[in-house]
Amino acid sequence: MEQAYTLLAQIQKVEVSPFVWTRIQQKIAQPIQEPFSKTWTYAIAASMLILISLNIFAIEKDTQQRHNQILKNMNLMTDNNLYHE
Image (cartoon, rainbow, N blue to C red; front, side, top):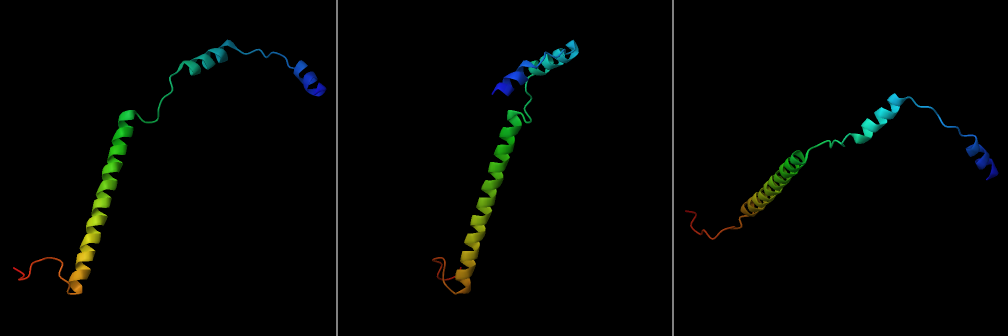
């Protein structure tokens, strides 16, 4: 612990050019820029939601068509059309 105090006592103030100080102040004063605007974020989210919905619809329709095809191949009636009009 004593060694830490002696090391801290040896620290001296460093002279910095005024140019560096003004650069630091400018960086602090700059507003943080977001990588995407909120409009783009909402547009991308909506597009992804539509894409996922279309995929679910397509998979559901494909599954239903396969089910109907299997029933027809097994000569099972899938509707109430008795006379095949």
